[in-house]
Structures are given as structure tokens and as C-alpha cells.
Length: 328
Ligand code: ADP
Image (tube, rainbow, N blue to C red):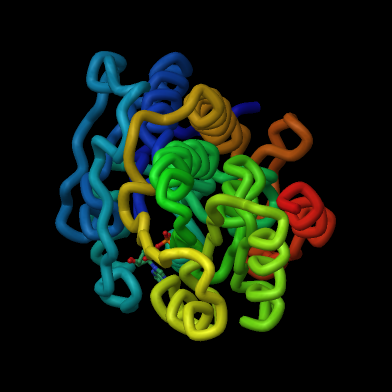
């Protein structure tokens, strides 16, 4: 029998990611389809504390599936990390008889959700929304695919100018702890080298790689640097390499926050829709402290605990090896 759940709220928290709107739309409409009163919380956990919680209907999510960002806004909220903050948030949900909460965000968001659920017994389901693809339990997180597409579109443009002037470009992409964006975009853009936070690549190794390309008459080179690389960002690496390798004019581009924006790819729209639909169905089954994700193209449920603690950044050495072979 279905648990007696009448009211569910949804929020987006932490870093925004393309596809969040498609996901909000799916959550709201799946809830309404099942006879649930749906609420949207503005600005993540800050909105729970500030009582910024508004009813949503099927029309309040019309025409948003193609939009980047999040119509519910997002925030980083320090107060939610305090016991008092958790209590105020709970009082605001209780006043509206809201017994289920769906959070779309990354590992920080899930940590908060878990504390909140444990302390106050609210049923919480997490949806992985982060461009970093750094949560275990889902092959893909929402926004990751769009971010890679944005990165490769930018690199393609940089390649045009790099090639025309015989330039060496160092392009810094997002990913403090996870080299997923860097590695995938290196493959998809045909970069000459990639530096990942998970792996130490010495300047010697990089210079040898670039020299080998120059000796076979490459007219330009692109090196992708993950922002979390141990030897520093793209500017630091470029400086070190320039001292030793002077075949090309050297330039640096930091792609920065443009990687977070833009209209979601079809993959992220579909992923957001599937995960939003699945999250509501999980809550209606009575589940709590679970994350819905995608594994092998099937919806897969993992405990938030496992999504957080088992997350290991397993470097895909086979892909890295392939990148080297394909860039000779
Ligand atoms: P992301 O979800 O993208 O990883 P953050 O790490 O900024 O982003 O986390 C988002 C929000 O989650 C934080 O601003 C805070 O409100 C909440 N949060 C993070 N850690 C905790 C915690 N230990 N207890 C309660 N809330 C937390």
C-alpha cells in the first residue's frame, strides 16, 4: 500500500547544472499526476530556512525543459549546516505538512539531505545534479553531458586559431577532484594531452609528448588541464612548459563558468526527466535517504550514504591510454 504522502517539495542546491529544469518539470508533473500537492523551494536549503516555499502546478513548469540554470535558483547555505538551521527548515516544512523532499545537487547537497532526514524523519530522495560526474551510483550526473559538449564546442573554436598561428593552447576545464570533464573532452576534441587531478603528469612527460608531436609536424597543440591538477592550473603548467619547449607561441584559456550554462543536451533533458520521474515514484513507495541514478541505461537506486562514501574517482586508464595513442 502506498504510504500516506500528500505534499512533496523539490529544491536545487549547490552548483547549478544544465538539465535541472527538465528534472524539476518531471518531479512536479509526476507528483501532480499522482495526486500530490507539489511545492518548489527557492534557493536551495536557504529557502527552507527563509520559508521561501511555494506551491507549484503543472503550468509553473511549462516551457523550461530547454533552459539551463534552475528556475528554483540555488544557493550555498551555511546556516543549514547548524542544528538550529536544520530545525528551522523542518518547522517550515511541517507547517505545510510536507513529508517528502527531493533534492537535486551534488555531494554537499546530499550530505545536508542525509543529516536532515536522520534528524527529522523527512523522507528525502536525492537526484545527482552536478557537471562533475563525481557521485557513485550513477554513470552520469545531470549536466555532465552538456558541460562536455560546451567544452568541445569552445575547443573546436580555439583549435581554428591555434592551427592558423602554430600555437600551443593550455585550456583549463572544471573538475577540482574529478577529471571526468577533462578526459572526455580531450577525447572528443582530439587534444594532444590531458592533465587530470587523479594522476601526476610530470612536466618532463608532457614536454616529451609535445616534442614528439612537433617532430611529426603538428601545426598546433591543445593541452587540457583539469582545474584540480596537483601542479597548478593552466597558467602554472603553461609557464613551466614554456621554459622547456618553445616550438609554438603559447596561450592559455580558462573556460570557467561558461561550462555550467547553456541549454541542456538531449541526453541531459532525458536524464533529468527520467530521474525526476523516478525520484517521485521512490518517495511514493516510502523510500528515504536514497539517490536515483542511471546505471547501464537503467534507473538505479543507491543509498545516499553509499553515493557519498563509496565515491571513488577511478581513473579510466584505458581511456587515458587511448587518448595518447590517438593524438600521435
Ligand atoms: P554541491 O551540492 O554542488 O556539492 P555544496 O558542497 O556547496 O554543493 O553543498 C550545497 C549545500 O549543501 C551547502 O551550501 C549546505 O547548505 C548544504 N550542506 C553541505 N554540507 C552539509 C552538512 N554537513 N550539513 C548540512 N548541510 C550541508
